[in-house]
Each structure stands twice: as structure tokens, then as C-alpha cells.
Image (cartoon, rainbow, N blue to C red; front, side):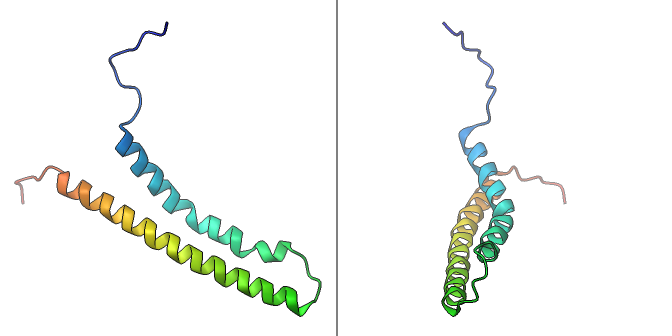
Length: 93
């Protein structure tokens, strides 16, 4: 059997999740760039339908990123407000 140590090796669950959310916020611009450049990889047939599909795709991704960032900003704002409230206040000016 594996013997458990009393020292905690891992971060607390709340701190770990908060850090992962901050990491997601840092990589969202790169993910957005990847999705924005995706129509370039589709190829150029010269067909007008392909261009219109690209525009629909681009604005769909744009709207999706706006909604994703809105939700992420609300969650991160709540987390940062909780950390600010729970931080010890110093009496020094």
C-alpha cells in the first residue's frame, strides 16, 4: 500500500482552478488567431460561395470569442474580487 504523507504536495483546488483560468485568458488571443486564419488553409477555389462561407465563419468565430471572453471576464473578475476582499489589510499608509 502507498503511505500518505501529511505534507500537501499539490496546490489547493481553488488556487489551481484560478491559475488555470488565468492561463486560459493568456492563450485566448493565440486560439483566436488560429481560428481567424483557418479560412486561408481551406484553399482558393475562386468561388464566390467559398468567400461568403469564409465571412460567415469569420463573424461566427468573432461572436463566439466575444461571448467566451465575456464569460471568462466575469469569472475572473469574481475571482479577483474575492482575492482582494480576503487579502489581509495593512494599517500602514
